[in-house]
Image (cartoon, rainbow, N blue to C red; front, side):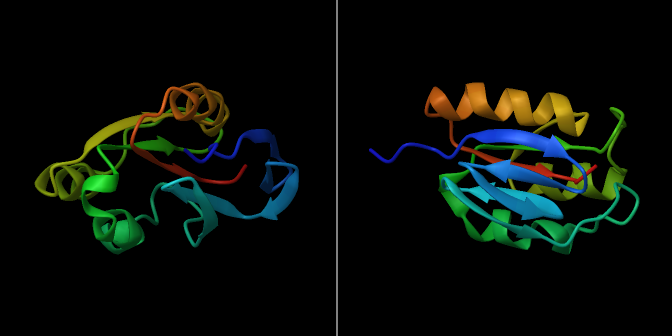
Length: 117
């Protein structure tokens, strides 16, 4: 079994994942970190989660880092994820990065969608 990448640091407009600096927002699906075009909670659309939807059963829920502060994602995002059969947990990006590390180490099938701060 592959070891999930750890999020070592966040802030300054990006993330350090498994020792590598990644500028901008971050999406991790099936233990693969990738760039994510999201820049703010208000700018999210269902299309922002296209890669999550495409992952099918590899993802059971989305851990959404909402930026500096915890904020309720827009209804159209909550509804799109629900309609796809995906759970949603949301919190500040800092809290989501820490939570991701714990849940990924437990082998949970999640997607981390983290807006850079």
